Length: 369
Image (cartoon, rainbow, N blue to C red; front, side, top):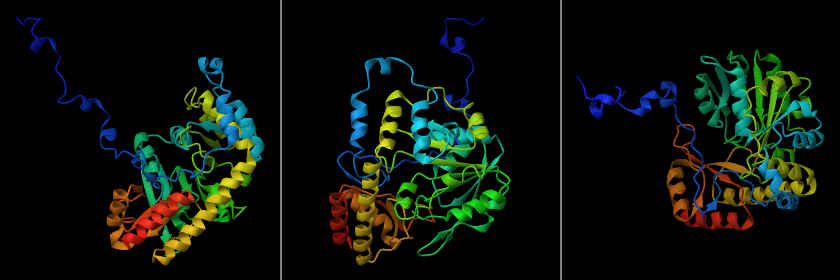
């Protein structure tokens, strides 16, 4: 008879490792890789806005009362959605606020995708699209962009993959290229499924092309979802805020799978303040575009090239020295983005920084080149 005090007999039979209890598809999942964070470095690798948020944001932060922090936030971000509706010309019932636009993406995936469903997207694009599909047990159908030195064009077959959900980042990340809205509208009409247009960087495109967004056409396309981010042109990457826009019946369904209190009280207040300071936002866009033009001029003189860019970053084609340049810049305490993949391993992505940051980058590159 075994002794219950003997640990060899009292511990139940277990698997070889506690990780064996994890879902098999999660164990095999490739985790999304975020950009490197290094305090004190010139950070040109994650496409944050180079300039501070609106002074109205700082004022809103100072007014957050103790009572507001003690209580749960508004679960629907009602006041923020009303401000956003007035800003973007839609109805509050067409909006969901999220803990960053990545949270909005998660809500979309939860709503539309089950195990074995498929997601279609042009490629290369934002890597999180694949990771979220894997979490849902969904298949990813990549359709390669038609790429040339100056353009990345959507493939014609994107509307005919049979995917339940199709995603287009517009402007695209990592290429900083823009697909015409007229083409996106044709895809929405042809799809037997839902089209998600991820407009994280569209504010920079709107600085030169007022017709760059799908938002004005939302009512004409009930199968379209548009995403916006506050991490880029609104300088609120640390606050984590995104907006999802869709037809009201879709919003009602997506609200069922949203986390109960997904946007905290501070972020709701900061987002509303940022949206209401249109002058500051326009100034940030103008300064960013001016610095992008300066970078383009100086990098052209170094012999670099990139697809026609509309975002706050450039995907620079630098050839076989790309990894060497990435490491050399890192040694100089300057971070840019590099991907060791066949599609991108001869390029580095460079965020448009402040004038001083861009000067530091250019000085380092002149020494390297």
